[in-house]
Length: 388
Ligand code: KIV
Ligand code: ZN
Image (cartoon, rainbow, N blue to C red):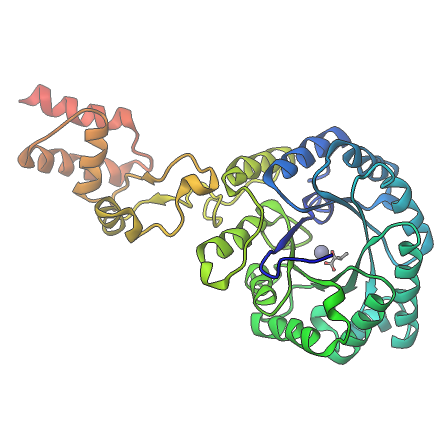
């Protein structure tokens, strides 16, 4: 299949890596509802679950396969026949099924998780891909802990699994270990040294243990990866996964990268709130793109600049991510310009002296009250009118 070299595929794992988070478990009907929203958002692949892990997860993969028609539906397995058989069975209603199989690639995992050798692991990886390929055409292989793997062995593994039929090769930074230039270099090395790399798409799957998941994913894309794996709100194991909304908006904001996705970014805010509610996981107010403060301007200097020209302090328009609107928050750090803006919004046009007077009383109030609302403003103005 021919791919547009500038198109980045978005692989959502909110329902698998995200759902592994303690307290975030979902019922099958909840997962179906989320999968339908992910389809509306425009994700290319939905990782629906890990079928062998429980009867409930198996059933969720079956039902999601029936519920969506556009995205590829993907099921996770380890590199063994039992897991792969369960995934094949669970995906039988999927219009576009994908099996995501894999095994550890770092010496740490090979020795201390599998008690094995590189040679044996390579054999198991190839066998798993060949076995899955007999039933499903689209096979993604993950080289777990690739972030810490020896690059020459990783390249050997990637070449072998592509030879066995893998259509996508996932290079996970499972432990969120890499620096962006290290991770980017890994992808570059694979692009340049794996002889059959043009037969597969390279996927980036980064964890956020050092807060670098988004930066690493973008570094991977800059070096030739064309699929990004992540979750809504960045939820996932430990410190989480790459946040899809961040990567998508980075590509939109930095058009010079020449990369694009098919995501309807206007659905992000609603999607984020839905995931937060259903998974009982609050979104931190300062979260990029979807946090409640992401478009709130509160210091006097910023408010003044924003009111003169919003692009002074706004690199993304809130409406582009479905955010209700930018806000000018009134605090004791706000200036007269911001107060005037809000008073005019409420229908009060004051002259310079009146505004000065109301502003002095506003500052006294704001030093003692965290949240200045419209009622407070009405009272401040009413006081002025009564007094005059
Ligand atoms: O982080 C990881 O390595 C994973 C794999 C199962 C893809 O989630
Ligand atoms: Zn993961």
